[in-house]
Image (tube, rainbow, N blue to C red; front, top):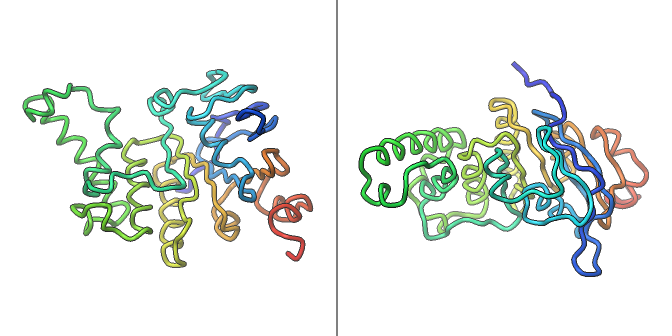
Length: 260
């Protein structure tokens, strides 16, 4: 059964972020609804990654309010975001290159591990049972993303497209309710992009995961997004359904180019 878009779960109100005298974000407001794919687009330097960093607590805005699942706060902390079900992938791949695919994905379960380091070192009793349970969940993610054949391969040996898929797997291992994807298809060829699009849609459809997506490929954005917010020089210049945004003169001028 197709997922239904639900109520607002994330509301960003009048967010402004500065680094010294540089304004990264200026008075930006938009919301994200449960189960939707919400795209953030804009030219390079528009403030897209800064906005994701505000959502998951890497950056703290000087002004504005974040409301997540009804709880109001000025800023989010990364550990708080993770514990509340917000997971993230990065524009530049942030994996442990010397570790295997399986071990990298296991790190996505860290917050859920209750036993202490000593128990895990001894791999005994409750820690052993916990490890088996977490590995079972990780294997499900590996099957879902069709990376069984590389599960024991060190990540550093993998081509770029597969490393991107492993990073998605690590985020999914945390069982997030809100998944932030920062250019998940950057640097991929056409076939790799098609695969990643399919996985993003499957995560959204099958798991009901809400997704906030930064992506430069406008074809991808228009095909898979429910709503799109457009940033330019740290300001919001458009917000709405893909077709509305695509035909907005301000968006055409700033991002798509007037020839389109």
